[in-house]
Image 1 (tube, rainbow, N blue to C red):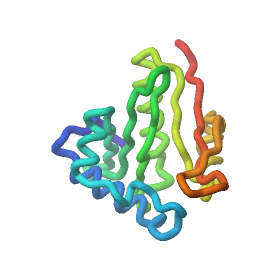
Image 2: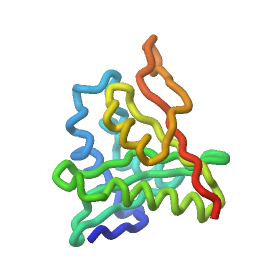
Image 3: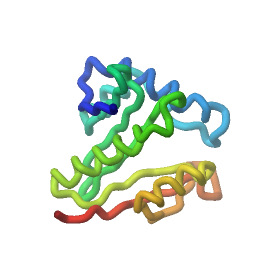
Length: 157
């Protein structure tokens, strides 16, 4: 069973460890490198002040997290992380569902995220969830797109 809860400042070390372990496979693979590898306890806490982190647990063990913040008329979802050994069990889906639920509770009906161009399988996963590419962008110093912005319109209930 997956348990989700909003993180508090005391959870920053857990979040940082989750991010490091979940994104380790991309270290030295993505060009430019993921900003996750530069996260610190302070940056995790700063994100907490700008938005919210949600933690996922299985049997009281932290296995995933996601960060989100309201940006105008959309909610931005980022730093979605699930430990490699916990993948394939619906944790990422549960975290995304929670962000979408929170957005609707705030009467915001659009969720946005970014995905690297070098990770087409991840982009396809988001597209199966109803997200659509709205922009192709390049990091500073790159000519070709290095990431895509995807958005999903949420049903108004």
